[in-house]
Length: 152
Image (tube, rainbow, N blue to C red; front, side, top):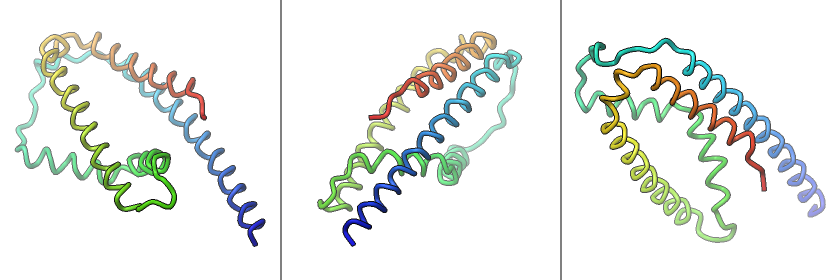
């Protein structure tokens, strides 16, 4: 039975490794596609666009629902968190600690992005072509980084 269990787990992990490799290349293609699309997009002067007024509650609720319904988030957590879980230790404590750590890092990084975006908003709002090129370049660069990443 032990031999069958080990053989089954080896096969399962081998299949999963191949699946993650395919998923990685699909991600590369998608990021590059989005980057090219952003790069080629016609520039828009955001100073002339009139945003529709929304309450903070409506904005938060929409973001929460988008995040909750995004399958990529579940795939990310499913691929990321197991790397840091120790077998045999209390699973709940480990996952809570990982979640709190991940949340703290996300708040700091997202807050930094928000502050930087606020500082450069006026400049980027009128420079649509530059904004598109920066966005496209970052997405293509992320795709290239993912393509060059080595599995350990």
